[in-house]
Amino acid sequence: MKWMKGVCALLAGLALAAVPEPALSQPVRSNFGGNVLLFDPSMPAREMQERIDKAYAVQQHTEFGGERYALLFLPGEYHVDVPIGFYTQVVGLGATPDAVHIVGNVHADASLPRNNATCTFWRGVEGFSVTPTGGTMRWAVSQAAPFRRMHVRGGVVLHQDRGWASGGWISDSVIDGNTDSGTQQQWISRNSEWGSWTGSNWNMVFVGVSQMPAGEWPAPPYTKVARTPIVREKPFLEVDAKGNWTVRVPELRADSAGVTWHSGSTPGRTIPLSRFYLAHAGVDTAASLNAQLAKGKDLLFTPGIYDLTEPLRVTRPDAVVLGLGFATLHPVRGTAALTTADADGIEIAGLLLDAGPVTSPLLLEVGPRGSHANHARNPIVLHDVFFRVGGAGEGRTQGNLQINSNDTIVDHTWIWRADHGAHVGWTQNPSANGMVVEGNQVTVYGLFVEHHQQYQVLWKGNRGRTYFYQSEIPYDPPDQPSFTSATGVNGWASYKVADTVAEHEAWGLGVYSVFRYPNVVLTRAIEVPYSSGVRLHHMMTIALDDKGEISNVIDDRGGPTKIQPRNTPRVTEFP
Image (cartoon, rainbow, N blue to C red; front, top):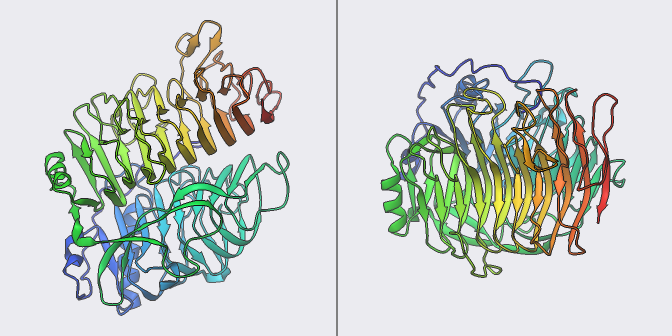
């Protein structure tokens, strides 16, 4: 991701030894498979710690490994230390975060030397409370590391001993003490609460946060939006006192601030787990999964990598597709991984879409081209859906996320063309665009898009909104002719609003350059039509290497960003 890169996967060949699970009343326990570790407060602490440590030994350094894990905690109190490695999700199964209480360390640590967390990706926590040892929880992460529905009975630091980090995301969470962002390069916090916030660097965005930090853009670089205009929280697993397993789908909220669960369970609808088909990597195919969708089943993906020979087709209104442990969809024959109908209320959550060796046209298409239905009362929502092209293996695609349906909400995504790992290079892992939006009234929170070869984001629909944008333009254009979008225009803008768009608004945008070859420049980081209906707030660019430049922040404004001499331009408002 950033210019200090990762160590290779060291432990990919290790196997996680099976440890017997407790006897539970629900037969569904055995249906999750071996990569879901289920914990019961009646289990001996030593046994739980042994299982946690064995999972972490496999996942600590396997940035591009093939294992996936979900650690599920039934309601109750636990005294354990929980380090969280790559492709590991830790989940509390209570109706509220306080139903599961972990006393001890729960932590994400820097994966690189010198406390460098810029490659600490693909891990997450949600749905429990923690009383951290020493009073502070360390969450030193970068992209694709969601922190949701958490209650920290203490403070949080978002770095490791002030080493670099490139995160990140907090939502629907309460932190009793201070949240210290420290050396985090950028961050978005949505609908959360804390005792205080300290720290800033380049681009910190707060939306629907009850206690906004003091200070105003550009010093410190805080973008503050008092209310979240429209959102639905991510669906989550829960187990009640009788041992009944369900999935909670939170209700749509408008004009909100703070968390959903102060008064008890998050408002919404409950779906019995029996309505879900539990998918298993190495067993299920695209055909078997589509057959279950056609029967009206929702899908719950257990951790693993799913090779797909055709797209998964989600067509039923209010269908839920939920992944555990960074379940990964891998198209292997040049198709999309997943498509949806132009239907109300579809929920896609907790998945990594990894491009395959044959070029796909797209990885995820929301609604077919020409979609026109109004979904304002019950929108399609994507939560923690991540994309990758190359890095773990050969990956090729033309585009990643295409949104055609109106009113779609994207609630945290990282759309990454790999800059390190396997099969990485200008011709080896091609990807033209990260996200293309055709639908109207599309709203995105936490938009991380990096290294694609043309526009990172191309927005064609009207009345779109983005709350937080982080982007690195590609490192590897070999020369200027390879990186030219039009006569007299060097490169492709990172964030492009089409000339046909009459209304668009965005808050808190940061675009960074790390050119590896000399004499390659980008004319502008953000390109929009000059119109009173197109408004952008708080933009910045920065150079992270000494080659090339970004000549302007937005259209012809802002001036160049360079290391020599150092210049980091900011534009407060446009137009």
